[in-house]
Length: 450
Image 1: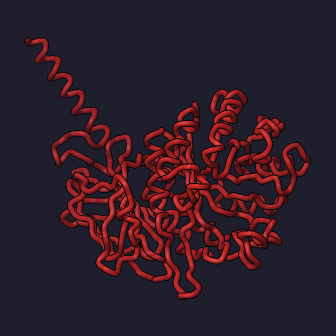
Image 2 (image 1 turned 90 degrees about the vertical axis):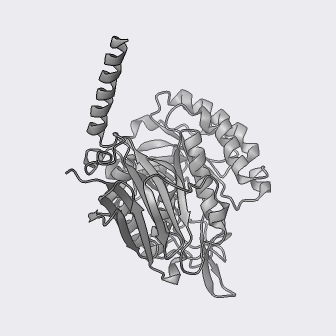
Image 3 (image 1 turned 180 degrees about the vertical axis):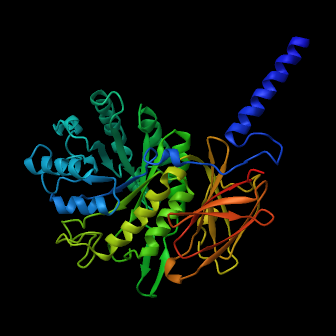
């Protein structure tokens, strides 16, 4: 019995010292979350993928511009040369020169994945294949077969198997399923769960809408459900969640994004733990105008190869992402909290449509806002909590939000906002954030070392 007691005492002491070293781990309030957490060691190691769909023309200037805009990856379409041609090889060489990663696009949905004969091993830029964009139920078996071939070609996980799913607002005729949740889960069962390395799941949903008849801008209903469903599936299937944001106007109801709209889409994605931001598109599609792309509708680079105002907007949000991705990617997403604002409701029924919303949190005494607000909940490997605070409102309403957070066991907080870090002293555990339209804030509460 004495040996058992001594062993138990030693074990408790070891756990106590381990907890102090990691910053969280005694249950006594004064010792928990003590000291500012440091993530500087992860700069350059934990880097977020920022990709652009539709690579530009294959010139040194165009690829350098993409790099300067803050992109890490480009989707390489076959519009300027199919795999195996000199023009295609030129794009890979340019990406190597400027330091961009390339996601190779499937040549055609009507052709087997094996039609791409390029030896990508000779290019440092090669990141993987985008095997299918927006597949339906009838495509899942083909993609699963492609995955088998892909993993034979890249057995050590040196390349990533990309696919991108429909959003919530796709019809059942497109997805093949009665509900969006079933569609996502079945794809994960049949494909994502069988990926051995670098699992990822991606989706697109474009929220920026314009009702010309009523002359109002609004956010698409269900956008948050697409994000939440992908985020929850990523946790369930141990995959990295990626998401496309709207970087251009298209059709008759999808308006052109302003600077604040780029920020809103990114900060909203961060509230759901998204780990890769993808712009639709980088280059304006060259088969436009026509179909869903109309005359005068452009993305970051127009049809003549010139920068548009959206290039600068994207550069700014990409800079903000890169400034703190090493911090954000040090946390695991646990879910999302919501609060209705004191002002007029703008999120519609999106908040009520979300599944698995966290109602209470042991660190949060109060969470209130003048605007409808999301708060992503995160935890790092040492037990520190992080909270991604994103007011969710149409940006052209020009509504600045005041958010009040009160924390248990915290007298200080690290706040990341617009890519800048600052320290805040808390009064009774309370922090007040002023957040401009589209912006958000990542908050890490802690106790200063006495």
